[in-house]
Image (cartoon, rainbow, N blue to C red; front, side, top):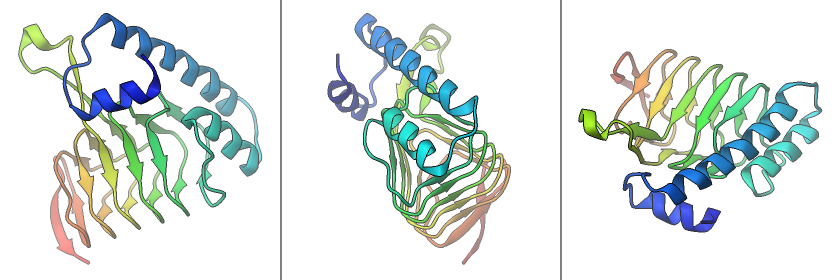
Length: 186
């Protein structure tokens, strides 16, 4: 299995349940940890941070992309960052299912992006199911929010600090709470 094949497979949202997939995910996790340990254990200039994240993501990240480490991911190769994105410290990207962050997004401290879920039935709990997370343009995600798999957040939306987003968020709205609910239009 390679990155291209894996990304195509996760688009189907079928269980990640074969020996080949598990072996590949372990290899990618080891690679992601090697890069994130280097990123998170010493001071780096913004250019050095972008170089390390480019290595981690597998493409040249935009020059306008800024991250305050530490930064965590258990895969790394299925993250897409737009222009003028800022990610604050201690964010976690479980990106197997794909995380796309649109231009101008602002991500607060300790935000979690979780693109995998487990089967609900006890006999299916060992299986994980991927689904992408997509943030439109100019989305602001407050500190300690959690965005769950399969969620799309529309342009200009705001996710309040501490929210747990379990379903789609319309553009130009504010959501908050656990689970996140509509608060008002912007």
